[in-house]
Image 1 (cartoon, rainbow, N blue to C red):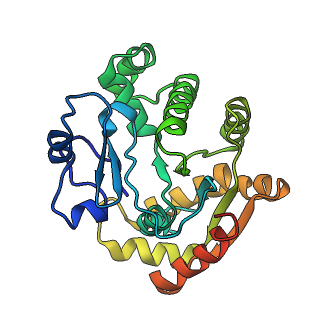
Image 2: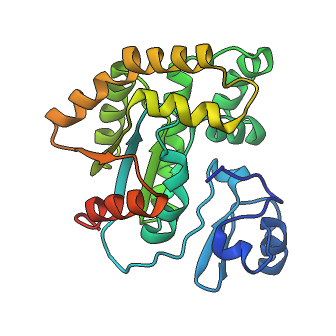
Length: 252
């Protein structure tokens, strides 16, 4: 699920009702501040204020919160499964890009520090990103007790260690790390089939090399912690989703 700006169509459950964040906000009397609105059992919290949307109507009932990380090479199918994970378990997605934009829009100290880098198109220093993640997760702990799902972070061992330290600090350790296992040749075939201009074979293979060098070591890192579960990322979307549910239902 792409993290949404105010006025965008929200989760599948709200989308079915033809509602947007603006319409939900007007109905609830919200005006710019974070808001919560019930819509047929779903909740929506303005992502311009929190940095991530919290839209959920979980299909299973559980008092257990769930904190998970999705790992996998680009094209491994993580994004395809995001909506179904959100709908089933009620977790919220956490994405660093949206947290950055939210802090800048809110004019916070971290946002003011990040803005020059973002305006220049440069990478934001990691200490700023980590601070935003901490702020976001603390906010999320108050607004969605069902937990969170991180996709695209951490990307290397240093980030994984920093995330572990942060989660220990705020008392929210990870419960599960899902690794989407797909053969690289299958990924190349998938991405070339999308027909995007930037998905030429040379670019794709370079992205896979970066993943192998930087991110693949996290497989062993989380395996040693007993958190890693490997999900075979080939087959139909439904088949892959069933494998994910079999893994996550253990902790739901």
